[in-house]
Length: 92
Image (tube, rainbow, N blue to C red; front, side, top):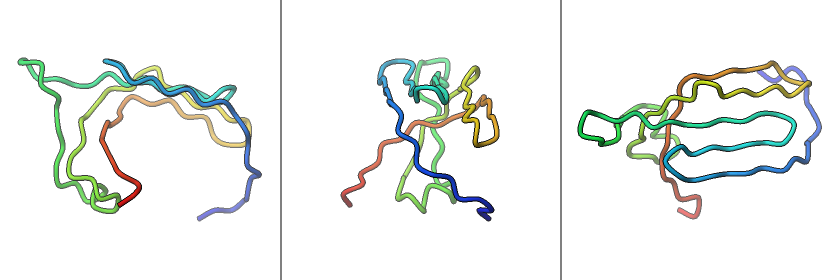
């Protein structure tokens, strides 16, 4: 339940796609993902999760996001240690 509506904030967003994808929102936070891989170097995948169906996502790669943090002064602070990577198409 949303108890307080906050105004939109304008901030620079930087996204980097490489072996450790990351996103930085200026003045608010950053997340860096380290994909989890098996002994052969293949991504660790999750398929069939209920949450994926709502976004029409078939599978996602699991990742660690240790060190990621968000600290907008108007919202609660957050530090993460898990994440996912997945492809999606918003034009469908």
